[in-house]
Length: 380
Image 1 (tube, rainbow, N blue to C red):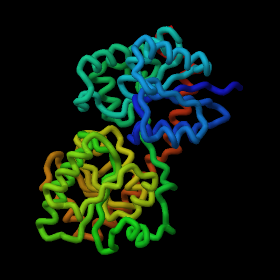
Image 2: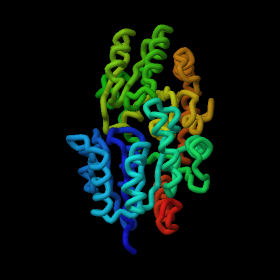
Image 3: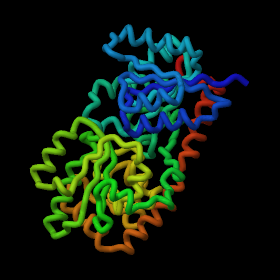
Image 4: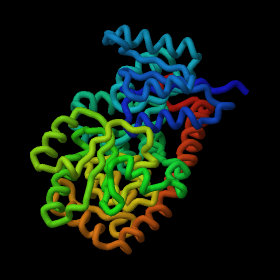
């Protein structure tokens, strides 16, 4: 049987959740069945790593921004060059700009994946949401990474429920099980002593991740006498300068480390005492799953996406969004109660087995194969 030629399309190539999902999918798809190709509109920190993997890779706006007509032609040529049969777009812009070359002109199976509710992201213009609502009527399948995203697709964007498929994000639990890691030595490399309570937040500096809430909560905890506490940030992004200024203003410099983009997230996660995700909204956050896979207790805001993963008081603590006092209180509660931390970590590790990346890969493989064999629901 000939292999299925499959094209993934992303808006950019930074180190966010959707980029991680697509890169991991490409690496883990059955190579006897699939020929994956990747194109991104704008490049990012993943490019050099991905190029070394040897898969076909294209950057649309490479050195200059192409016009809409040039972009259409560029995408159409990729489809023709690789004999693409199935396209998987992620996020709004690839769907909007790819619908004409992929679906109308190319007559390919088009599967679209959304990673959060569009109405929660202030960067997405209402006109773009209306256009996506229209175009989703013509795609063959729609994937939501959480129950909330799937409900939004059906109830708000009007997608037929028969076209919507739930495929939760998954984590490779084995990568985060590091029983032989020398935790003390790894902390020493970071300049963190063993008796310091170490909190982590590994997410790019974007408004929705709400790093500022955690900084404020840290300040409150320190003012309440908890001096042996430190916060690790991993990531890059537009808010970094502002966050560093806030750390400086609150005189937290010796309590906060900005590590930038890191490839050693499993090791870093295993050095933590607590993982905190104070997001304003989420789809299905990878970093929370990774913390649970590493056996690290978690505290997070009670927002959609997170509530699907965390059971309050059992697999983590949940606090209201935009409430630094509540977040500080949860952090201090976990600092002071070792038994609670260990219980949450143990139950979280058990819960995360439901989010195995092997399941995610198999679900996407089945979706791609069945959509192609079934001929799709879209424009033909």
